[in-house]
Amino acid sequence: MAHESQRLRAAPRYRAARRSRPLETQEFVTYGACVSISQHRIPLLLVENNEDVREALREILESEGYRVLTAVNGQDALNLLAEQERMPALVLLDLVMPVMDGHAFIEHLRGTGALALTRVLVLTAHPTLPLPRGVAGRLEKPVKLEALLDAIAVHTASA
Image 1 (spheres, rainbow, N blue to C red):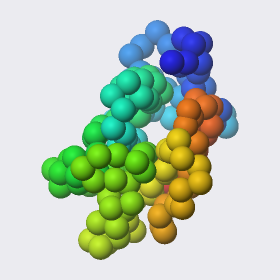
Image 2 (image 1 turned 90 degrees about the vertical axis):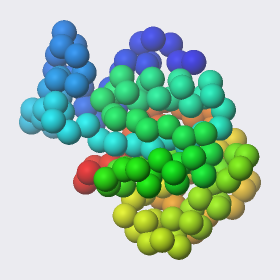
Image 3 (image 1 turned 90 degrees about the horizontal axis):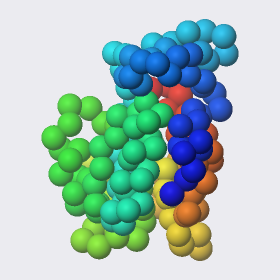
Image 4 (image 1 turned 60 degrees about the vertical axis):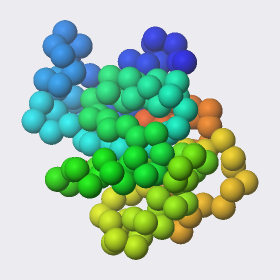
């Protein structure tokens, strides 16, 4: 798990204007402009079968102001997505999981047209595995916090 100072550091694009209020009502200064995230937190879906990794990443991402949905495998993620009114801005996806792996999850999204509605960033401990067609990129596990936050900021910039 990351050190506490790393956990609370905002992505390089943002810095907290105030830490005295709950994160949901903080304002962020980005390139000199003040942005409030009180009404809209960017939704992410984290699909990871390792409970320790899943919970650690969820806590970190929520502390950074993201709304994080979690799933333990591809089938769980599909069930969760079916309940949502809109697709998350970004799916963080492990490739090697039981029940339904990341490749099958991507194929299902592609088959329904949902892959065109969201970006998928693969998090994998297997860097030699081929990436499924249509994913936005890959980060190797153990993922570096700064690299993860940078990638999320880039891939959710228009959300």
